[in-house]
Length: 385
Ligand code: FES
Ligand SMILES: [Fe+2]
Image (cartoon, rainbow, N blue to C red; front, side):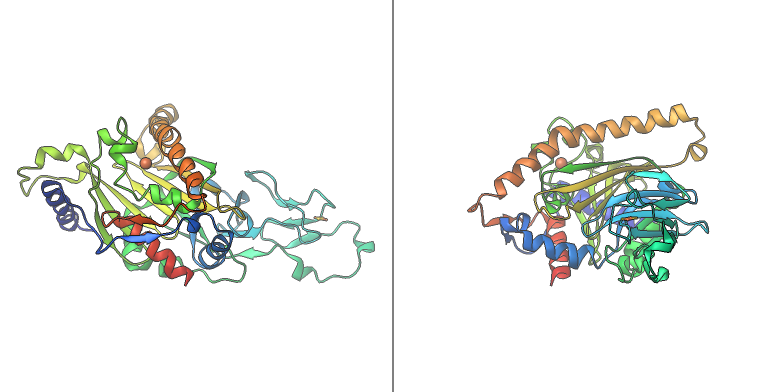
């Protein structure tokens, strides 16, 4: 994006602030509580969304060296993601091909082979079956067909992406489309590292959580003493790319330019940009780092999800600081984020999920001003169709 482009978008925000308006969609939209509670709907989402399109599972720096691995629960599969000796990345279903035991229990580590705790079969980090114990008594099997089941994965823009279905295709650039691909490229996140990644298993539907991070309408009501001190409520400027979108939110520091904003003033420090990467990721772009939020459905319970939060920051070398300074700096950001999440958003969302499970809670309605939530719903509907 050129400066002129960004400038024009910020001026659109200023116009909204002056007029008390926001980007909107044409009409309100009714919706039903069962979308957040139905096991059938949740099954469709796992298969037709996460089983078909790429989503981010980690930053590349989290498995930087050959044989580094992480494990995670995707909506359809338990997964091992492992850096190969040639520097590429592979992902496998975390299940032994003998009798299906969980192959790797640790959340992260480095190993030369994966070895099953049950009868000690072992697999190379490229997924090949290396050894069958008591081989001479086991009988003849086709070892080539008993490697770990591979899942499609790709590295792009410093992230590891995955489609959660064996045999599916993956093409991240195509999925992102030219606009969002360029937006991510501009951030140069492959040069950054994960300062910290943490997961939260929360008793609410994943869409409820993702919705909360696309919502500029709740800020002054749900976060009066935190976010609302710095960010305006109910003012978004959205660019819809189809599948993905981005939006600017004005910070309150922009107020000094409300009456007159001369052309040569750089207004970019007074806005926050969010990229929404379908189906389940928000990238909050801060002046000096990026916060990555992902939301994944539970493998069976529509009322549960896992949110992962990451701070992706420049390296110590790039910042020219030592480890202590670096850690202190990002820890401060991390704590602020965590506090708002745990004390303000999570309690609201947990109780929303409880309320939505009332048999007669609906129908409900989304306002014209809740534009980012509309776009999220539109894209989900498209994938589910
Ligand atoms: S289940 Fe893994 S070796 Fe038997
Ligand atoms: Fe919030």
